[in-house]
Image 1 (cartoon, rainbow, N blue to C red):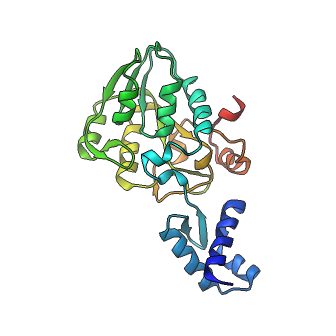
Image 2: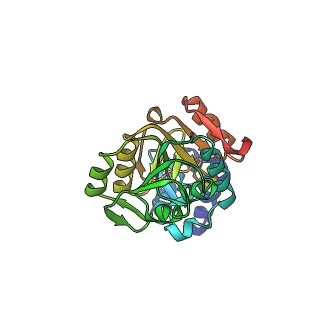
Amino acid sequence: MLAAARKELLLDRLRRDGKIVAKELAVELGLSEDSIRRDLRELDAAGLAVRVYGGALPASPAVVDYAGRQSVSPESKRRVAAAAVALIPPGATVILDGGTTTRALVDALPTTFDCTIITHSPTIAVALLDHAAEVILIGGTLFKHSAVASGAAAVEAANRLSADLFFLGVTGVHPERGLTTGDADEAAMKRALATRAAETYVLASDEKLGAVSRFEVLPFAEIAGIVCDGADAAATVGGLRAEGVTIIDAAGA
């Protein structure tokens, strides 16, 4: 089997099964385990898979740049955003992470809704210009890939604030690998924001369920729940529930 055909087969298995065990697949296909592992290394380098011990897991499509993410699963993001808005009580102080799902949350938030929003995302702050909500913008070094402030100055500013809720954006939600994102500094900033809120909810549109990125953000024990659109990801949602995670299913809302 040619290398290109093997890689396409591996990607098909990742889409179908949600994982690859190199030893098992090598036996099934009558190929050497070294060949499978080499292909997985190349798929990992291309951003199409994430290698783990013994095999690989699907790479998140949500790690592309901000402009590219706007066209990924827009309807799913709108459903998740609507379910998240329902969790916000009037008068609450809310931290909004950056990203296109939190941008959808702003669109779902009534312009007259009385609350205070803290964000480290300039795009989120600008989207709130016509809202009644008071807006507090955290500054720092601009991480252009996600259009958010990060770094030491941003963390220091975050540590002076507190909130009722934090809506956390991630690029991967996996029952075994947890909550992940594609940049170490951005992951650190997300952790800092989570410490400032009484409750943290993860926003997970459908392309993030079952996917994995490089850097862990938070353990499941440190979140209040995951707002997700799980109609097409029953196995992943079931695995999350088995881990004790509270699921707010936007698909059934």
